[in-house]
Length: 279
Image 1 (cartoon, rainbow, N blue to C red):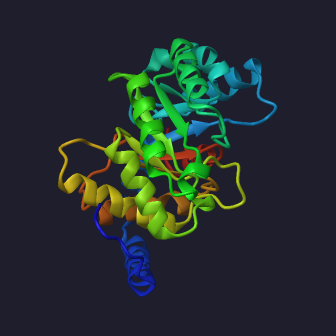
Image 2: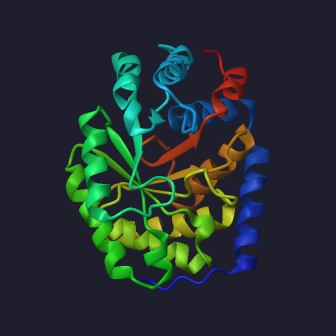
């Protein structure tokens, strides 16, 4: 595993560079960037009080924001119980359905049950699964069992289901541990690594994104497999999404970003984006 040491001065300089770049964007460039971010949204409802009627209404709003000239958001993200209802609304326009699995949000569930939950979500219509790792085994230093958990999730998903691994970075103790967890996830079949469940006190942070994106960059130096970064947990404004989008673009040295490389998990961003774009 490559040696990664978080350098605060280098990080601060990078963040300054990103903000300067954002401030230099023309109105035309901003509009294109907002459009790109729109295509990368996982429109998410994971409320304790969700029910079928609410989820159908929520998904219909995602459909209503779509336009033939712009397209659709990447997916709607719901609990497995509601994947079928979500699919009935969004599938006709080609939007995907993602479901959270793995004992969301704690990850504290026996692996056999986690794998059953993946199968349930897929059988119920999920095209993508956002799988929560067991942070306890990671914090205990048990990288072997973490790798086994993720590789088992990959095998259960098969080739046709997108697997996003939720690290819950706000509960990890250092940028170096975030980098290590990211690398383990990528080496064991993750299609995306994701910051947070959105259910803890600390969600996404630029520091966590910086560590995760460096893990992706280093992984891809020796792999032909396309992998992506998903930011979630407190990403509620365009400025939030824009920061992480440009961080991704800069660290991965990518000219154009699509929803196979970048996702934004959010429940509140679409109304703000709709004011910036003509839908």
